[in-house]
Image: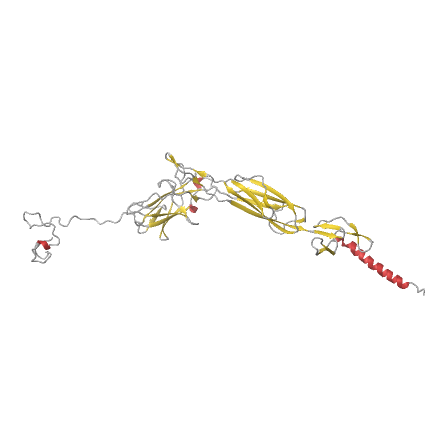
Length: 412
């Protein structure tokens, strides 16, 4: 109660100067003809309330046709782990429920159910207005039992391909989880349009198995073949993905491009390519490489009466490699006999030293000369007895002649 005089007057108990009354809104005297001086002079009462809370959410679904739009017949995905991140730290976690819904809200929000389920990520202190947040979606925990057989892992669908209420928002940053960055509005500005669509991308993969003379021979030295003989390389190419692969090209690092019966393989289709060459001496390693371009195509989206621009499914080229080894054995010459590799030839009559004919077996325990390399080559075998007996016989013959000569009488 402020009066015109007394201790509550602005300038003290003797103050009667209305010009110095700090709170005076009306001029006049108490009981006078003018308006009551203190009547409603300080205005009305104001209630001080807390800021209205903010909620974020709310939907995760399976984008079967990969168009990035929540079509009426597409199924929801329960069990997806959704995290609310602020300043690099996770401040709340929610799990999508049987309806594919999730929410982030203040832990003391007045509209929460009595016992909030796992779909509610409760934020201590609430979600603050005009603040940046990141929401991540982890489908590794998803319950996919209701989606039917899937041909691969769940991956995020295309982002922002339609109206914000029915599109998908997250994108993949690097190798991390799909995520969406948001900035909250003012107090009470709920945002229930942060949705995520997951799909199964068509896969593109291819394999090749290379063999030499029907031997896979991935590990050296591989089979042994004769120098100059025919070596057959076989390449079995299989499309192990779900997409067709075209523009197939098969190359061998030693033989160049190999002709194949097809340049396009459908999913799970295989083909066999072959080529031949002359064997070379020593260890030979050939690597076959198959490469091709998946046929990914495009998909279109219709919203209302209008068709949206085509969405291109991007697929990178695929390739695979496989080695094959063999060891080529050079020709060995003994006298007039040529021995190739480990092949045993029939005994051959040749002349050794004088004109004495001798039967020489193919395999001898001796060091012979390799005509191809000029180096000594040791060849061993059970048939070495012939040359051994011949040598012993020659020694005995020489001894016999020496003894006979000494026994001859001296005619002189």
